[in-house]
Image 1 (cartoon, rainbow, N blue to C red):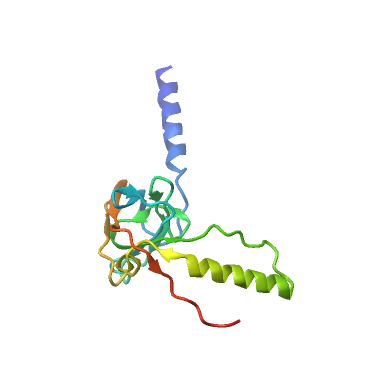
Image 2: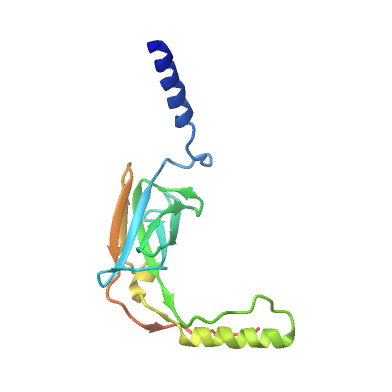
Amino acid sequence: MKHLITITLLIVTLMLSGCGQKLPPGMPKLYETGLTITQDGSPLTKANVTVISGDYSKLPYSGGGQTDAGGQLRLTTEGRYRGLPAGQYIVTVSKVEGPDIALPAKVVTDAEIAEFDKLTAEIRQKSFEVVGEEFADTETSPLRLEVPKRKTSVTLDVSPKVQRKLAVDTTER
C-alpha cells in the first residue's frame, strides 16, 4: 500500500510539472508579476500599463495590460504569456477619461459615417488624460519594475491626477 501511494504521488507530480504554459523556443522562464497602480492614494482603474525591458538588446520582451477595479493587473509577455522574464523594466501608464457616448455598431452609409465622425470628434474634444505626461513615455517615466526569479507583486504610484487635453487629430479621411 505504501508503494502504491508513493507511485501515485510520483505520477501526479510528473503530470503537474508538465501543466505549465508552452513558451516559444528561446523565450526565458516567466515569473508571475502583479502590479497595482495608484493615484492620489486610490487604485487607478482602467489604466493602460506597458512594461518594456530596460535593456531591450539583451532582453527583447515587453508586457502590459489594463488595470481592474482595484488598480491591479497580472502582466503578460507579448500579450499572451503569463508573467515576465526576470530583469529590469521601464513602466508606462496612461488613462483617458471622457464622456460615455455610445458609438453605432453599424457604419455603412454616408450619413452613418458623418454621424460616427461627429460622435468621435465630440468624444475626443471632451476627453482628457488623467496621468501626468511623464508617466506615458519610456524616455521620461520614472517608474521602474524589477522582476526577480520568483513570483512578485509591486505597487507603483502616478500622482498627482491631472487633466491634460488630448491632442486633436486634424487629418481628414
